[in-house]
Amino acid sequence: MDVDLKIVLCGVGGQGILYMARVLYEMARISGRHVLGSETHGMSQRGGSVTSHVKIGDFHSPMVRLGTADVLMTVKAEETYPHLNFLRKGGRLLLNAPRAFQLVPAVARALDEREIEVHRADATGCAVRLGAPLAANLVLLSAGLKTGCLPARYETLEKAITTVSPPRFKELNLAAIRAGFEL
Image (spheres, helix red, strand yellow):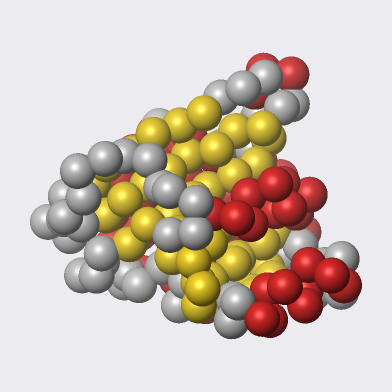
């Protein structure tokens, strides 16, 4: 993680958005980078929106302003729409959705006009096949490395997972990131 990066993570309560942010914080720390973050919980305990902002690099404020995010990662595809305005022109969108998932045509056109790279990863399907549907967040993070949305080394993600995972989930979480990197 040797470039400055503004990332917005979004989903709903119970999908591990805050855990994803924690993993990104640890990846930045391992890489010797400064990191700031902010989170919005909303009605997270009732399945409502959860958003985390992560800034890696020389930043002084944790919030990502509208139109400045380099990457938007959505664990729930439907959460993509209310958060698209965070992406900068030429940014990258990584959404948890099967390849057949289609964005609303008007949105797809707007993304094309703004030169937004759109990447899809069926993180939920992959996590279900692993027998760990709640690990879709980690599958998506790993897919972010593979697609280039997150400019980091796989080994850095692996070290971060090893550091922040509770011992009883460590092997499962490592399996989730391996699966995500193979999507």
